[in-house]
Image (cartoon, rainbow, N blue to C red; front, side, top):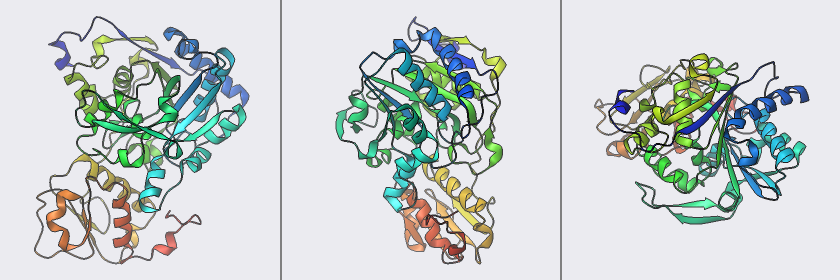
Length: 434
């Protein structure tokens, strides 16, 4: 932490972050009982008590928005916020506060893919798959797919890159906003906790902006206008390795057994990085926050209560970003490419690998990504050219424009793979690919 030791604290006020460990067996995200839920609720109460309890963050007869991570249609609690934590939070709100309305809100990443390329799930389908629709039904609360809500354009004062943004009124007009991210690392962002959660608030058109090397600046800009009153990090289970879209079972940590809470998203994410065995300055958005001397970015300015970090931190396996020489029947020529294109290529190639598709290719697939990629005079066909930075080679294969093209990369991969592999054998009943 040497970079912190040579500068003064941004203010004399300590940022409080609370850690609580689950004691006892509490079931699993897709199968838990009332007894299991009681244990999670008790742990959540313990975590919130040093912050003033749940009554410090919501008022009777108010509207409370709970922003979860329900971005994917996988099994509950693996890639997404654990339904046990969300249900425990709702129970506390209903028992001790009595809000007029509680909203579970999300704009799913898969919904963005569905909008862009026609492959993926709606937010409501993601709610159903990850167990939150059942929670909403049991507790009588509202599910909000924010892509279907009215939005308002908001100017962002003193912004670095994102000077304005369209924001759903379901969040803007809520009396209290509570973030409940899942605990996991991330190929492009390093970690995806509270600060990254704002990407799931805004619509597809805004998600695509600055989803490249400028993502840290964007996330801190968004924090100026979408700032939660309370952050509760679900770390009952966790995800290491390839992060939120990992295809590998070993990346799931099923015994992290922690809940973390605080009011400052930067401080909470800083402690989250330390819990993963990371130096916060190695996380791009936290390094930028430290450079800007934001409150909560200096570990010395954080008062941690509850379980000491030394008793619960783990060394998370970092994500693998390498592209060439990793995948069967795939050759990658990589120039100067940012995390946006590289991480999405790796995500989608991982998916094709685990599905068994890459092993079935009859010919080599060639991929070009990044500026100034060094190419041979003859490229094996088919060729996929990814992103604007590789646009100088667009006449040598299928060009996917954009900065970064996000889900269009997956469509481009499928288009080229379909010329050298029978994809029908991998199609699921839903019409998507395994």
